[in-house]
Image (cartoon, rainbow over all chains, first blue to last red; front, side, top):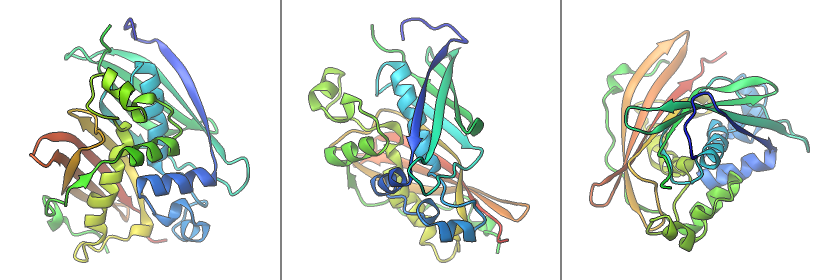
Length: 138
Length: 149
C-alpha cells in the first residue's frame, strides 16, 4: 500500500469452497463441530445442511487483507460478525465466497482501516467486518 | 435450559503450553489456500524481521478451539449444547503475529451470557501469552446456542 485514499476499492478475491475444503479446514483448525461435515446433524439443528466454518470465511477475508496490505504480518486488529450461514452442497461445484474491501482511512494511531465485505450468492455472509493494518515500511 | 449467567466473569485455569510448529502453520495456510511465503519460508519471514515463519491471523483458532472452546464444552456445570452452537462474531487483537517456536498458553474467560428469543449468546475471551507472560494476541468470540426447535 503506497498511498491511503479513503474509499479506494480493493481487488476482490473469489474462492470456491467444496465439502473437501471443509474437512481439510476442520483438521487444520481443530474445529470438528459436525455441522461442518455431517448433514444429519446439521439438519437436526435446523440448518439447511452442512455449512462452512464461519472461521474459514474469515480466513479467506484474512487472505485478501494480507494481499491488500502487501504483507502477511500487517494485521493488528481483525473482527467480523457472521451474518448468514454459508451452505456447502454435497456436489462437485460447492459454493463460491467473494471477498471485497474498501480502504476506510487512517486511524488516530496512524494505522489503516479496511472495511471488508464477503458474499455468497450475492448475500452478505459477514457484516461489520474490518481489519486494522500497519502500513508497510517503504 | 438457558446458560447460567452466574458463569459471567468465570476464568478457567491457564492451559498447558502449546508449541507452535512450522508444519502446523503450513498445514493451516494450505487449508485456507494462502500461498504467502512468510507462512512457509523461514528466510522470507526473517527478511521481514521475524524470528521464524509466522502464522496467518486466524491460525489463532487452533489455540482457541483446542483450549478456550474445549474449556466450555467440557464444563459439565455450564451444560453447553455443542451441536446447537454456531459462531456469532470473532475478533483478534494482535500485539505481534504468532510464529513458529512460540510456546503459548491460553487463559479462557466467559465475558458475557445473555438469552434472547430462546437463543443463548455467550462471549468467550482467550488471552494468549508466551511462557514468560508476554501477551501475543487476544481472541474474543460470541457463540450462539440456537434454540431447540
